[in-house]
Length: 100
Image (cartoon, rainbow, N blue to C red; front, side, top):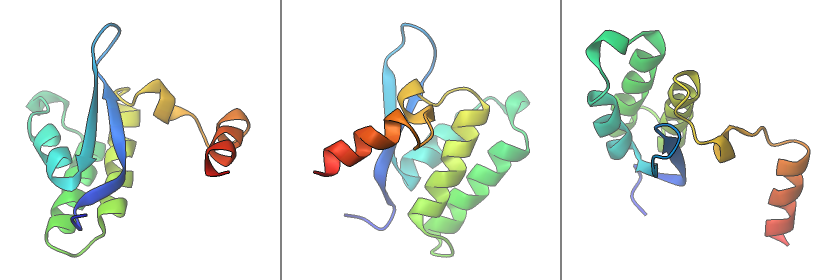
């Protein structure tokens, strides 16, 4: 596994009826961010891009960059509903069941 690979892919849903895209590395996250419309690039976008660049240069881990990318996806409402659930309640029970 590459040091830039995410442990768990980030699932992006671009709206109802569209296929879910999985972003599974810092490199793929950067490609996604660079395609983001210029007029919609705000501080959360910049933070995610900076974190990805820091991971590429070895100043940050891929998982730290992933967290920033997930934050960007959540704020922009692109994060797939399955990923948007907090790890509490039913979601936490499902994780426990999978680990058994």
